[in-house]
Amino acid sequence: MQFKIPQDVQQADKIVGPLTLKQLIITAIGGGISYFIYMSTSKLYVVQVWAIATAIPALLTIAIAFVKINDIPFLKFLLLQIERFIKPRYRHFEKSTGDPYKSCLITPEANKKPSVNKKQDIESKMQDLDKLTKILDQSK
Image (cartoon, rainbow, N blue to C red):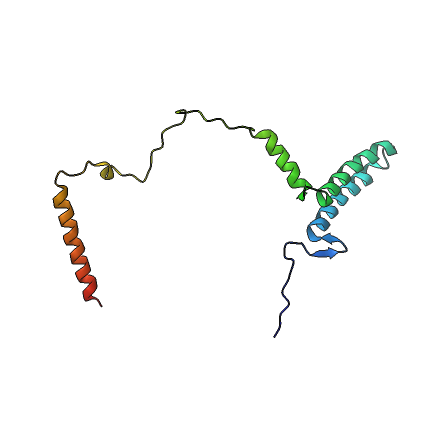
């Protein structure tokens, strides 16, 4: 049996015409907000008032849904610009200004000074290793 393998998995699927699901949801929410503002202000105020109040969310919705700057979606671009203004541009290194690093993995036993008889310690470890190898060889 042959199966169809998708070729362009990076591109979002088109749901309605040229709109992806994400664009469709964004335009529906933004259009709903603009329509609500229009319905609530059109009978009470003149055109100059409700047209501006309705156009602001509509333009913002269009920008978020469709505009890309350097292949970056407008909302992500806007958030990156805000992050750029908040974070410092340059990092400065100052020697000895931070707290010294103390590892929680080192126990007081590990900080003990080595024993005087290193030769005896090595010999006892070798004997333990010999015992272990004999046990492992017998288990075959």
